[in-house]
Picture 1: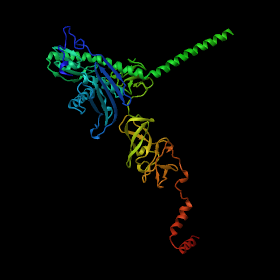
Picture 2: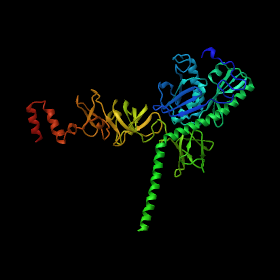
Picture 3: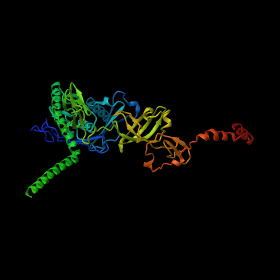
Picture 4: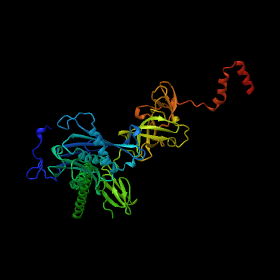
Length: 273
Length: 234
């Protein structure tokens, strides 16, 4: 993004943001489960212009062997950004930022998983950012937790995540790229419903204590909404995989019905005779 | 009764019932006396066992690890005196997405006594085995049963495939090396190999062992010797 793109005001006179949202409004979110055929579990998320794919492999054997943990599975998260995901070409070498976000995502997901059921194994989570427009680490957590559920990894709960930021003194939910760059701060957070335990809390920029508390409150509420969306995505995926069975069941029902009709007709014939 | 009924779709973290009603099974976990779903899928309640489980759309647990009773195929990678390691590539006749390791203990090869694992398996053999442990790494395997065992063996001397002669005896048609394996009943059939009972190791008959054997040993000696021994026998 060139410096010319900097908007004059991140919040206009009517109190709306650059993309026309209210301060406490999420971008349109679309989650899909089971998008990749080869992976054990996969999910994609589109949040505004952010588009992310997550794939889960495992539990499987861990190579190199020296990384194995004898009491639980090792959660290996790899967060990668595609070279074309940002306006300036992202250099393809793994960066310090990617390594850190991988670790942060792993830490956010791990408390939700029953990794102790698979000692000496590894659960691989690969997250590929196809298009980045702010909030990629939160979107990644959302997609990764769906992919883990799709892979059948036992988990306590799904992990919803959302970022809260600040621009011109107003707290904003789910920052876009411009708000992230030119705003005053950013607090990504992830929770474990229903207790809303916070597993990810980072801060960039300056917040007063009151602002921080309010931001967390806003984030937790938004996470609840995000959790509902995740549940919906999983249920849709289940319905999509079942249609063949459902159709068969329906057919059988129809057949039964027709049979009944025929027997009725037969009986009536007999009576007539 | 429970908060859910059979066929309901649940997601991880959904409350299913209390522990007094139904005991947690596949795809569920229990916390503070309440049973929750640990995976997403359809609820299945077994009133006979009084257990509750969550199954995927395909009707099983979605995990990529084998469960007890799965038929697995793979290549023997290592053999020790007591155990053997198998790299598994097929699970229930479908290619495994990520290959995994199985382990066979000497007690699970056959019901008869086996002195050494090396007598029944060799590296590079292709085996069909049954999983006897669920969702563990490595998977414990068993070769007990007619359907399970080596389905293709390689000659240790020249690497050529071995041909089955009779029960568990094999021969390499290239170098005529004889070996033994614990074979499945359809050894080699997938690979177009026919059994060759005519090449079975010749069992020396009792008389051979007693007289012929002695004679052949004596054969090295002079004819005079042989005549004398015959005389003595009479």
